[in-house]
Image (cartoon, rainbow, N blue to C red; front, side, top):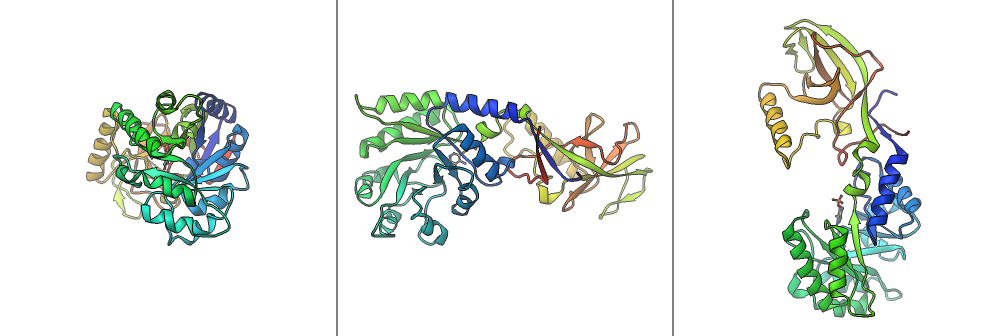
Length: 352
Ligand SMILES: *Cc1c(COP(=O)(O)O)cnc(C)c1O
């Protein structure tokens, strides 16, 4: 194999999924985008083995990718829009649950067909200010329920903090007071979600809470998967030799190593952008500084260290420099490469 490779320790990966699902009543696994690096089809199959009854995708066109691999309901997270033909078509699919986020869409959606009632969850606008009904407009749910099968309220929160929990509590209360339906939450701990639900549930009432989880489920066990690249070529260079498309000069004696993985695989996207930790910030400052000097730290580890890019990654391969003080690799070696899983595209996924 000469491409970018993802190796999954399936036993460890599944043990983590099982533990998280067991600890999260009402969990809805999320499989969207690049399938968190694993692929949508694979995640749908995992969700099937986990025995969950619902799976969430991001976009309407992702439904077709998962529906053969999963038997339960499929929730589309991106809110429904009347101009999206695929979204409109899917409303008729009895396995699909649509997200509605605007007052004007409730009526249009409710009138897509006279012979059935679309299944929907109503989204509440949070401090994220992405999508959702204004909290002042939640009373519209009563009328919506005449046209739609309202399966719940969806509340998509910013990343977890004390403030997020307070917001989740407040919006959940408003929503459930406006119309009694299950709460579908994201990005709060399961125990907190259960607490909120319990506070709002009347005696004898069944008001389950559902949590949509992607990252923590698929990427939560860091040691359960690893990413590697193949060494495609190794060339000895002397200080000052010209190399690469840009004909930069080698900064010292050593080797140019050509590796699998380029822009098409998402290589070069792995630098932290949100800078959440001091270390991440330090890395991005260091990387930026090197970029300014014409070179950047690559995500490839050779002889125990991340090595410098010769130049930005190419479409399907990358060139890095290994100084003469290090041990050069051999063609065919597999070396660790750090990738951002939500932007990565692998040539090969192997279950170990
Ligand atoms: C993507 C998404 C999630 C999953 O987010 P993770 O951080 O990957 O767990 C949950 N809820 C909604 C509405 C989403 O769009």
